[in-house]
Length: 117
Length: 114
Image (cartoon, rainbow over the protein chains, first blue to last red):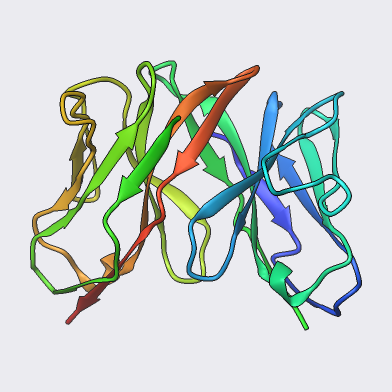
């Protein structure tokens, strides 16, 4: 199973600033995913990050607001730009890996709890 | 499209009560089905999974059976404990370009009282 380290684990930021969240995986993976979990809500996929290509964003999310880097097969960053209080959420990094059955399951980092004031 | 629908919470039970959290899905093909759990202040972790019809996933006393005829994957536990208080997410994976994508239900918060 994949082990995912995410940092920072939490931060309190001023509105208008940007925060970059790092995600490190202990094995090489093709796709990495970034999710947002707003207070009391489920997970919403922000984008899928493949190494060597631009991230693919879901409806409602744009690269200018959430730029993503994927410089190699074990690392990715998500930046939350020009933050507002509405960006206060938990941001989660995830990978899908084949399980013993050949299907996949998702592994998650511990998340970054962001509060924008 | 592909989606997951689970019962709204919160669900409040007394210790040792029987738990059922309903989950139904819409998907093309044969997705894998999962239950994830999020304990207070923690990230998500896989609770159990099933990869084909009639499979039963089980872990920590929780069970769920992949029912293709009813497109359901209901979570059950015979006797809940206070430590089971958490948010439970039903999910499925579907093929995506170059891999798979996970789709989550809205989550169901469970409170277990002593």
